[in-house]
Image (cartoon, rainbow, N blue to C red; front, side, top):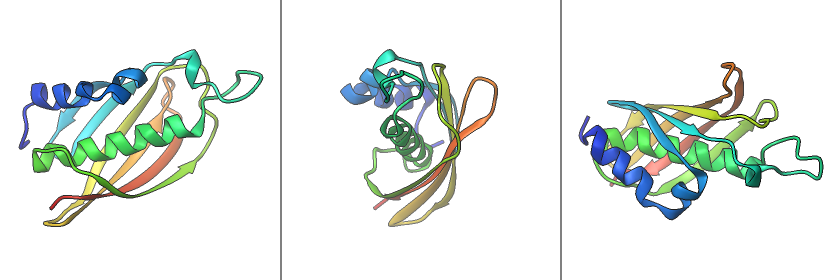
Length: 133
């Protein structure tokens, strides 16, 4: 990795939005990260409090994809494009995002991300494009 686990973790928790989400770095390798999103009541989207808002899931995919690339480029990078497919509702439980780098070029990087629930079922998948320049 071009950044230590400790520095990567410090970068993750330095953002106030990431702090609000409660994100934590579970694992990191060159081109791979696993993040944990602990459940919060504030994430619920409907009047019946039955599922987590898609915007929270989108944020988790974006951050995980970004941080997978950060393991290779060693610095924070901006998002250019983000695509998400929601596969099933996220319920009242902790979620995990696993992100793998598909390409890390001189100007662009691409990461694929899957969000899993505690039982290992896929909740959403996404692909992010980031500026590595």
